[in-house]
Length: 253
Ligand code: PEP
Image 1 (cartoon, rainbow, N blue to C red):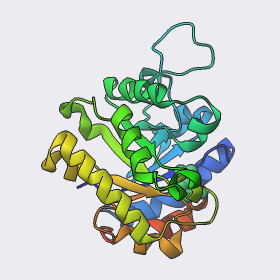
Image 2: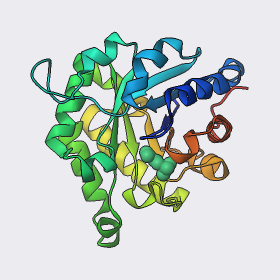
Image 3: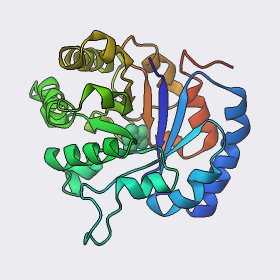
Image 4: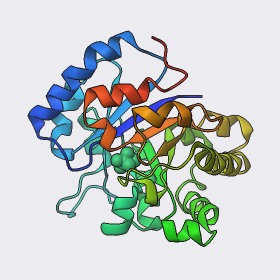
């Protein structure tokens, strides 16, 4: 099982801040292992920062085009990301699903584009508060997996990371309890087992995201089916991000 903690800066920081953040991570990364550490930066910094990333830091994009090369002004392809040394991209983040037209079919095409370029796809899924309160949380999440992940060939699934991010917990300061998160992660693991078999399902990292911070990371990451986290606000400062990763039981120090 791969253990992963990935940061998501969203639309924050300038290029110099990105470089300073990497400086702030490098000696810590040199001393700590056992958890794959990733960070999703704003697109303009990728070509500069991916080659400069300290050992042990995988640089991700926050988006990718669902289209290939061609007349798609403003879009960037998975091959472009790969040519810049980027390891992969987040797809299906709830902010993009809600505000930028990333419906299930678009998210699926983005996953396919990343996998075809041999890049990692961090596939986000999660229910809104209304969906949870109406008892549909599990159905919504499993449906997102059905359209985004089910048809992926088994030989490409090793490049997929699933991130369960309840929309009501993202950027709100309200974290799912570890029991709520574990329940959904167990459902996701069960779905992955049916889709790909037990051995493959166990190898797919399933991350929790939603107001995860140093004070609650250890509790969340100690749950059986939670393999790490996708971290927004608490990834912006190296010391907070390190504090989150230090909550992972697989960290070797
Ligand atoms: C996210 O943006 O994926 C996220 C989990 O944000 P936050 O940690 O700030 O809730």
